[in-house]
Amino acid sequence: MAVETFFLAMIISLIIIIVMMLFRVFKGPSVYDRLNGLGVIGVDAILLLVLIGFYNKREDMFVDISLAYAILGFISMVVLAKYIGAKGDSDA
Amino acid sequence: MKILGLILLFLGFFFILIAAVGVLRLPDFYTRLHASGKSETLGMLLSFLGLALYEGFSLTSVKLIFIVVFILLANPTGTHVISRAAYRAGLKPWMRKGE
Image 1 (tube, rainbow over the protein chains, first blue to last red):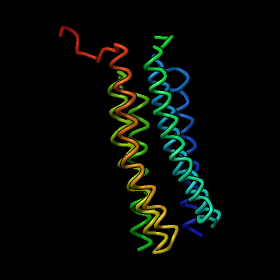
Image 2 (cartoon, rainbow over the protein chains, first blue to last red):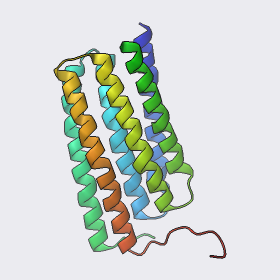
Image 3 (cartoon, rainbow over the protein chains, first blue to last red):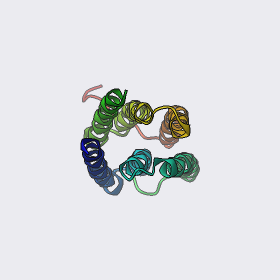
């Protein structure tokens, strides 16, 4: 039981960290700061998904979801950086 | 082995917290990218290794090791792509006053 409490505490702390990162995404001075905040949120969400799986004892299903989310987040970040770098940022 | 896994998980969470504080508090874009590029990668690596040790030897732990290898390759690459796009767009690094 104590292990599940530990997992629950880590899940809540990760959600708080993700909300803190949303501050950087909404406020960030340049568009690259927003992109950096989105990348950090994407990487934190991978760990959050695996921890939710361990808390519910369904880790064999949630590991596949988080693996797909990791690949998708990496590809979307590279494509967005290339697109904004070619187009030029509008704010900043 | 389970206790060692939980200790590694907590250590990784500590580094993730340091990365979040660095991204929020540092003064410049490149320093913020530095915080999220290295500390975040180390935290994720320690966390997933801890979860794999907690799980024991099974297909799930092999997939967790696979996520570790992918993050170790992908996270520095993404940081490099963002910093290259910002440098080409002409974003100046933060200097001390008078330099």
